[in-house]
Length: 255
Image 1 (cartoon, one colour):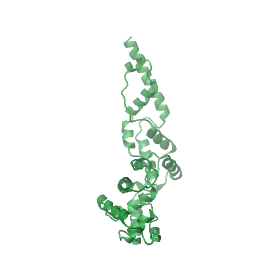
Image 2: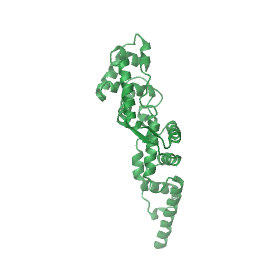
Image 3: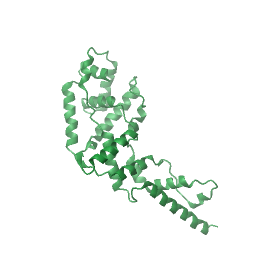
């Protein structure tokens, strides 16, 4: 990544002043908005349980189904849980899955609970744009940027040096995706730089801890919009009782 940065400076695509300007711009964006951390440990655990729940497979329960000789009650219960919480799963779309991000989010939520902090989620459109550029460059650049496949960047996160470079290129392109792609084409096609110490100019990941803070904010909102509480296991147990009671009544009515 340092080589690409050096190339960009030698080509005049960006310089130290531009990087300083970008740093200040991102800082001002975060500082202009603050929020109070309200995600409790229970809220964080609930959010992680929702994300791990197999909600992509949906099926409406009918008591007649339970007459099948190998009917799987556990699967039916999870399907019913999905049906009852569809708005929550829709809200979860796009949230990172990486375990390290969840651990960091838990630590941040615990440390800052009740405190006002910079609202890094105001950077969302710029983070999304940078992630999109990361994916495109990694797919089409002809070089390797790490072990994680580009298709999984949105779930596992993009390589941090690549993310920082994409943010810089987009910033110098007025956040125009195609202008930024054209600059990357020049970077990749340019000869090796004559001075690799120029790569020291970029030492900023403008989205530092963005994903973790996004999870903290998301967990608080999920908790506020969860009408049946935050105990995942208790809700599955309650649903099982309801479904088995529906089946018992149905069997009486349909001997």
